[in-house]
Amino acid sequence: MKTKKRKVLVILSNRLNRLQKTRFVELNCDDKGNIFKETPLRAQPRKPIYAEVWENDDGKTSISSCTRFKRKYGHPLQKSKA
Image (cartoon, rainbow, N blue to C red; front, side):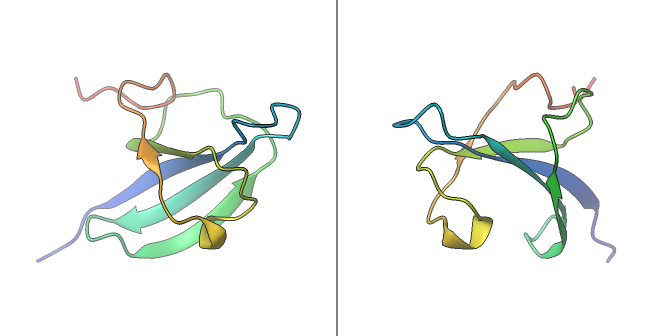
């Protein structure tokens, strides 16, 4: 059976220090959660091309140091299913 590839946007921010720069990371993964490619983005994306948007607001600087993420339903950068 073929697995479907999708793009996921991960937002790394700091809720305690809003002066810390927000980081955006694009993940290419499959439905099982296997990550094929991790690409840091220079700035916030402008077009809604992502299947899911996840956020960690603990002030971490990389995905590997994060322990949990919150999924952002109805985020402006998430593409609609219609």
